[in-house]
Length: 117
Image (cartoon, rainbow, N blue to C red):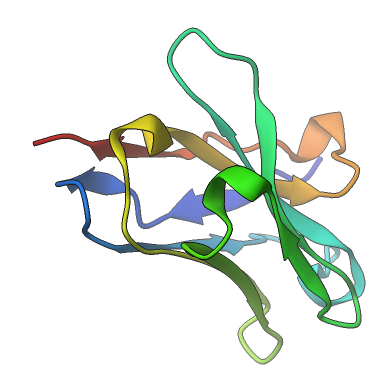
């Protein structure tokens, strides 16, 4: 069983930025050879896809965050990052990383992002 580990969340004001990171704690799971994605689950909402990056590092984000969020892969560190700029209150959620499509046993605990003034 592999649980991915997310970090970097916190409490910020609207308009501020955060950078989330995702790593795999075990060597047998290689972030570099999987299409990876960030998901989020807001209060009272279902978990949704936010962004994903292919094994060729082609990335895409959903329309709600286009122009504000960017996903990237650091192959040397075996890490996937989510740069979030100009955060809005509606971005408040627990953010998770997983493969795309997601694998149930890979879900970690997530990292909480709260955007509030």
